[in-house]
Amino acid sequence: MALIFALALLGQLASPSSWPTSWPQAMPFLGGGDQGAHAWQRYHIRYYSMTLLFIAFEMEMMFMYPWAVVFVAEGMKAMVEMGMFLAILSVGIVYGWREGVFRWQ
Amino acid sequence: MRAPIPVFVATGRGWLGPCRKLAASADIAVVANIRQAAILIVAGEPRDEDRDALRRLHDQMPHPRATAWWGTRPFAEADSALEVSATDDPGPLLRRAFAALLARVRESEPDWLPDDPPNPWRGEGDHGQGGKGMMGGTPYGRPMAMTADDLRDGLALDSFSFTVGPFYPSLPPGLALELVLQGDIIQSARIVRPPLDPGKGAADACRSMIVGRMLHLLELDALARRCEAVPVDDRDAVAALRRRIGASGAMRAIPDGLGRIAGADARTRFTRMVAALGDAEASSFAGPGGRLVDLLPGLEWSEAMLVINSFSHRDLVALAPREVEPEEHREGHGT
Image (cartoon, rainbow over all chains, first blue to last red; front, side):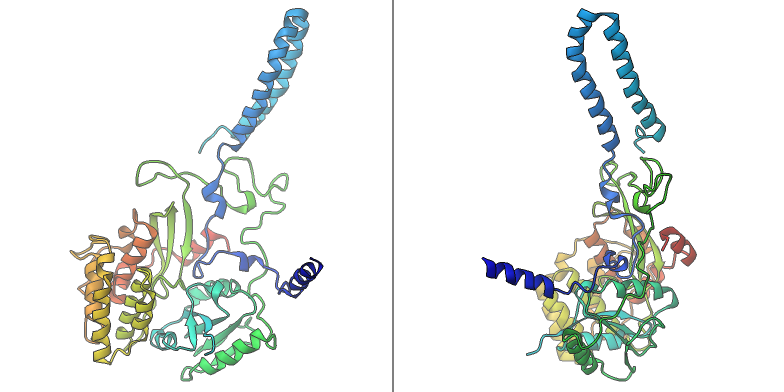
């Protein structure tokens, strides 16, 4: 086992790591051509930011189930607290809206 | 038996004939991707507009690497360049250089381009995030994916734009195309640079190179190498090659009706080209009229390559006039 480890270490040390990959070398081979767009362009997760908002409000709904029980007991005080909680979350929506996360194109 | 030297050939003006002889050498393996090469051969004078492409190509070659300048002067930045005169056979020099590279006696060439990202992004934007906004921003300095109308089923998929050539082995030397793909379907195409003139007296060599490229595209590599190596003035060898190509089913492998223009499709044009092998006097069919870029949208990548390579050089020059101004191309790619 020690011998295998030593050989692996030796191989690692002997590998041609003296030539780190440069930016020009990392570019895709296009016969001298150039890419006009990022390679990720085809795989843009367009729904990513909407998903984050969805998760935020899904969690909020989970809070509201036990809150409904508290509301029956506490009344208006619980209503105001929930209003504040929803207002804070709404700031996130407004910010996302401003940044254009709901625009598909 | 020594292993052949893996070389990538960047063909310059009027050097198709010598490059064909080089490809026929048993001592040299002309590879289809620069990443498989140890030596880049610059054969002949590259066009001024191809110099940046050549620099990009060189820097993509893995270490240890060297560049041989065959019949042309090296770039100023090419230190320790291998120079071969136009009349000499580069084989022996390449063999020595390859052995020296492997033994680490010869230094591997450094990059010719600065080690900078193609689209700098670090520190860009209000928060150094590399762009602006979320949707439609430019993370890593590149535009985000945007949809375009799909030609097949109306499903709007993300399109991908790039330039291929002028040293792409599946394309005629010098031809550079700006393409937009969705999946492997070509949405649009523009000619960035027309193909190179093969030079006087190289019509025969050019034809056999085109037929060889078509056979490579049809995955008939052994037959393609035979085609690239056959002496075009040896009637018997050429006739035997024509029979082999016919028997291989290569013509039937090209879809019927593909790239039809002026009443002839890719299969017909390829059949004519094979029939004209070894005939220096053979002319291409009369100028087809039309544009190459109009034939490509809607084709898959492999079909498009077959269509492009089914034309003789003369027809391709007529079909593929330059459509992108050099300045416009540079601005569009930001390199």
